[in-house]
Image (tube, protein in one colour):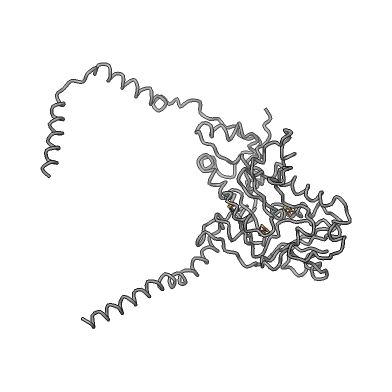
Length: 281
Length: 145
Ligand code: SF4
Ligand code: SF4
Ligand code: SF4
């Protein structure tokens, strides 16, 4: 009797261990295969384990931006020009109420843009400078990790993009983004404001609008880069060279050269999101 | 068990009783039914299924990116594929048909030839009572009429 009970306990113990270990072991075994078929499978839209997007290590290109704040300070109106260029090209509606407004690129004071940096006894000029803020196209983008539908994803060129078709408006990404780079469409962007004027003054027929319940943000002008154009904001800066766009992974690109020579800062670097937007102060 | 048996017997006896009975107002009901079914199936046997949709074909373009039969039934499949290729994979490779080049895009591709949503898309979508939500975001070409 005694012996039997001990045997039983041994077997029970072993099966419990096997039961716990087997799924993990199988997972490790099959993981290689799953990732391999992901790579071969074409569409990034297929759901992956637990609905979380895998953040790929940058291979090849990684686009980034350098913003020279001094130039924005020097050329009055340049900030507005950039915002207008971006917003008109991307059909971003103009809400006056800051609670519901939509923004892809806009001006912030130093205190707001660089909350992690010390503001104590900084020079007066710094406080008057216009800091253009936009999506940082983070290398380790938290918005990509949290998006349950993979509407937000990282493309092969290191841009954090949105597939508006897939966005369900859960706004997890807005909670995850530490920079407030994302805006939500609280109402129909094709609607009219209080004075009966359309929110999108003049639609760009080459680009879609969004619909109510969808999140949007700067897309690094992916649609323009694809056809060999510069981002609209960079184009608006023109010869001032207040914004420089290019491949951070290419040592010979203009942006890499500038970064090598100039001292730049990034927003909230301590969070580890690895922003791709740099500021010359 | 016994109870069940009794129930079955009772139902059977009821059925048997009804069997020989004549149908009340059979003379009205049966022709009525025939007329009703006839009317309901009229579009099927008469071949007149209402005004069939006549989407307006673009001028100056003979060939679509796929053949007509495929486009008729599966254009939405193609559009979904294009969407994934362009938006997600950044594959904007254009489509060459004869000497013409087309963008993989609804707004900047299809609608460049099919210049009227009303006369093309809506024709069949209204007929089949489907309401695709493409146009909630994509901007349709200006209707000229
Ligand atoms: S700035 Fe915000 S929205 Fe842009 S990639 Fe980083 S976390 Fe995402
Ligand atoms: S709001 Fe849209 S993009 Fe943001 S996490 Fe939800 S589904 Fe993804
Ligand atoms: S890169 Fe393009 S989308 Fe982003 S802020 Fe500039 S113009 Fe707007």
